[in-house]
Amino acid sequence: VAIGTGGKNIAAADAHKHIYGYAVGLDMTRRDLQGEMKKQGRPWCIGKAFDHSAPIGPITPADKLPKINDAAIHLDVNGTQRQHSNIGKLIWNIAETIEHLSAAWELQPGDLIYTGTPEGVAAVVAGDTLTGSVEGLQGISVKIV
Image (tube, rainbow, N blue to C red; front, side, top):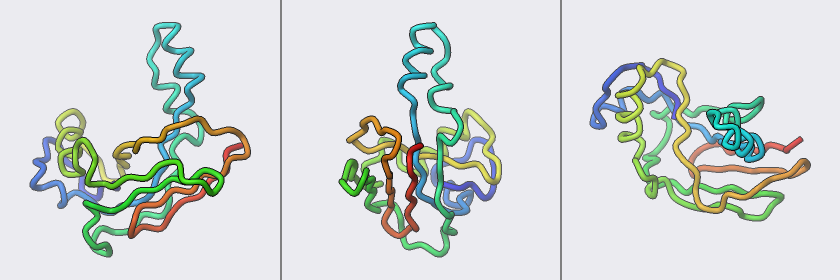
């Protein structure tokens, strides 16, 4: 979700007014770094915020899309389906996510919200090609180096 108009304490009913558009993004985690930070009693964020950890495809303006609330989500690794779900299965829907996040932080234009990960998380290795898609959006393909 790409934020177009920022705000603080945004009600779920008004969240759509703050959305610029949508894109397919991959939220990567380095479990090795995350595990090491856990052992050291340090914040785990280094395992989530490393170089190239959040690739994103082109952003499609919300007004150019049909409803995205029930769009299919897919991730293939080397041409084999790894994850498949539906946006309607998110724990918090997009509007609720914006409401909760904006209660903690003032959202700014250009902020990107990665909404969640479907079942099927597993390690990837150098040489793997990941292809992500959300129904109605341009997909993304990245090669792990």
